[in-house]
Amino acid sequence: MLSFDLHKRKVLTLFLLLLFAWSLFGVNWQEGVMHSSGIGPAAEIFAAMFTPDLSLDILILAIESSWLTLAYATAGMSLALILALIIGILASGVLASGKRSRTYMKGSFRGVLGFMRAIHELVWAWLFVASFGLSPYAAIFALAIPYGGILGRIFADMINDVPEEPILALKATGASRLQCLFYGYLPSVKNSMISYTMYRYECAVRSSAIMSFVGLGGLGYQIQLSLNDLHYDEVWTFIYFLIILVILIDGWSNMLRKRMQL
Amino acid sequence: MKKRKFTFLTFSFYAFLLLIAASWYFVIGVKNASFLELFSKENVAYASKFFKGLFGVGQEEIAFLNRDSWSYAFTLTIETLQMSIMAIGFSTIVMFLTVIPAARNVADGTLTLSRKWYRWVVFGLIRISYIFSRAIPELVWAMIIIFIFKPGILPGAIALALHNFGILGKLCAEVIEDTDSRPIRNLASAGAGRAQILMYGVLPTVLPQFLTYILYRWEVIMRTTIVVGFVGAGGLGQEFKLSMSFFHYTEITLLLICYLILVIIADFISEKSRFFVK
Image 1 (tube, one colour):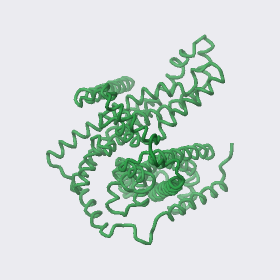
Image 2: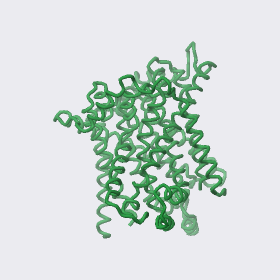
Image 3: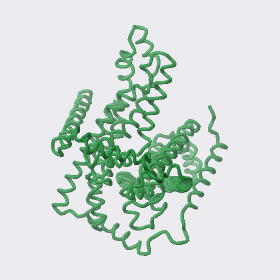
Image 4: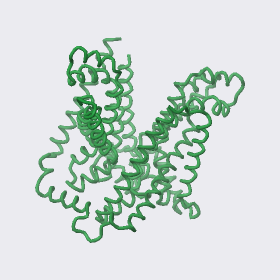
């Protein structure tokens, strides 16, 4: 293992700084980076932040679209969890018999997971909408595939990190591979699986909000509509609802994590 | 204590089940989404036409066999890479400026051995800004930012940075909270100023962990560059949106290939360097 000493760290830092400086050359700074009237809308948007539109129909609309966002996220997440459990366990290779089939199994299923999560959920949504129309399933599948990929990969890593000894003990008593999985691997990673899933659930809510962009409804869709109408105060109302939703789920998962550690 | 833990866990479990059931009921019952309808004749025809279009079946100009469009896609790829690096750079800079007062052990004075009342105010303000910035998705940030800046990679980078600075800040503040406070307290009691504490006390201990998080977020940013491009923030995403509106399906395939290559490279670099940093 390479040791990360001071010298190497300096070189690495310098390299990263140079990389950042190089990226700044990608912008055409001479012609000005703002719109000629860019300050006006900026000030208006900022001012609207403190005066969100709280009229009744906007609030009702916001609550409805929050529920839509949450429902898509939950449905997508439940599918993702099923996908992740199946493919993740296969990708961890604990079900394979020999060393050779284990490598093949690991490689191929990890490849599948990599492909699933390489494409962003919005691109998946777009592909689904283009191929089978504006159905809620487009949003749900578009969430389920990349999240299944991320969760599955993490699950596989967790299962591979389980200490060998308890599994060896189980094997010594004559447990089959499936029994090893259910009585050895899964119970020992259950808690970390739950806490990671909760963390991802929060991300899924945010993603489901931006599914809007392809026309699938929800909070993001309303944000986009209000922005196009230049109703900045409505935009902030919807954004505050999104923030509240995210904070609620964050708080729930924090509480759950704390309890499970006890 | 044990009883309470049990009830909260079971409560969460049932609440989660209820939530799943309610949302599936909502999707199937209220929205009337039929699963079988997805595979109706028309949809299958549309889908097959779409995928045939993607692979360029029966088209005259196939973008991914054309040299010019490859070189154009290459410049876009470089632009996207620049955007992602700029975004992580901006968010890292802002994170470094705010992370020290945002750590709980700095705010209550256990780390620096000096208690000041305004520390808690600064702590609260910065933490609220973190929550605010990470609760708003990057696409929404981009939609707002594009009103202010000219289209290009800069607004995209700013939108990505605005979302990621909250996440980075939260993760890195937690790292500082978990560090061993004794060497830093030693520095503080020897009279080191804030910048000195940062340079000689905090940074050396937390930098490897910070780098891991920064690289991890960079990998995520790489994946989201395409999304902020959709609203006109430059790079591959913008071109993707345009080709989608013009129905240039073969170009979409080309752009998706470039995007996948970028994401896989980012994945590889972040994985390898994580190993290196450890």
